[in-house]
Length: 202
Image (cartoon, rainbow, N blue to C red):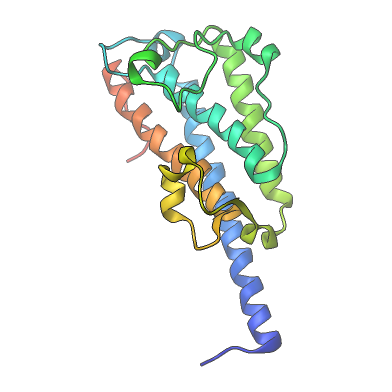
């Protein structure tokens, strides 16, 4: 059965609303896992050095939070929160999310002020959730990175997901924020076992 006119528009609007509602709930749930993780760890757990080639939890925590912060610029045009003032407060040993650095470099990542990091994390996560709370689902279809992709984008998961025109706002939220966040939460859950802590979900 083919939909036409007002019926098609109503179905399309309903689908967009469902996608937005799902994304809001999924992002909030994913953020809650990060809040639970940081609340149940001490700085010694976060900065624990297991061995060469194994990234500390500090890397995963800062990398994902800082990438959500940076990705927000591409999706919304709003500049990142992270700046020299935040670095002075959080005192990351490497002032870089490390996406384009090697494991050998980023294995040295450490958080200096854990409470300041938690404040930064909440600032970033709240901003994302506040944006989704008032977002028009019509924005989902807007292309934020057109084809052909630059080299740094072409090798990403989002490039594999992208449609013919390029990476859309919805692709950005799904890949750069939601999927990326879950990927690093998995790393954190595994690394918690190395410091004597349990996983986050069953």
